[in-house]
Length: 215
Image 1 (cartoon, helix red, strand yellow):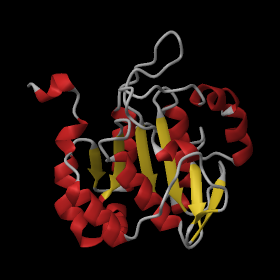
Image 2 (image 1 turned 45 degrees about the vertical axis):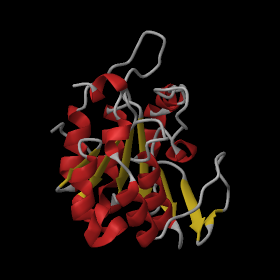
Image 3 (image 1 turned 180 degrees about the vertical axis):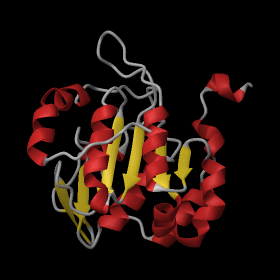
Image 4 (image 1 turned 90 degrees about the vertical axis):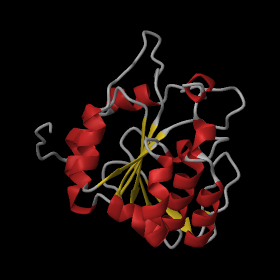
């Protein structure tokens, strides 16, 4: 694992000056009929925190949307502990159905190592030539570690959404019925039961590319 050092908000802001521009590059959907990820409405180069009574529902909704066949294909990284917080006991039954799209790690450190091992496929025109990654986490006291991980992985299309206030990027307040500042796309926040029911109805095989279905 890459050695990580203590940092400050001021030093991070300086290092992220060019990174913020880099992350704003448009990542085209893999197929023309796929909808963009809802999580892109909250994406930020330094990650985004969510707080408020609807924070858990928002992150749960982002998870389900990322695993929906009609959405642009992406990979999701989340710890087993936090996945259980989002989906309850059913998370143990559901997670194998969505592997390897849904990458479930045992610890927070494992999630960072998983991201560090991910290869980067940037192209000369600045576009990302791979699936985006949605990282759902609760950094807590590990904010310094997380922000360095984000900086180290600037060459991948990474959307990091964190439960709780985030000192190195924007923090959005989410009310019971949704965010105060609405995203570009229509969104209905999901309860745990609604999320589990929807995931049970989804077929991961529909997310494969035509060439992959023939293997």
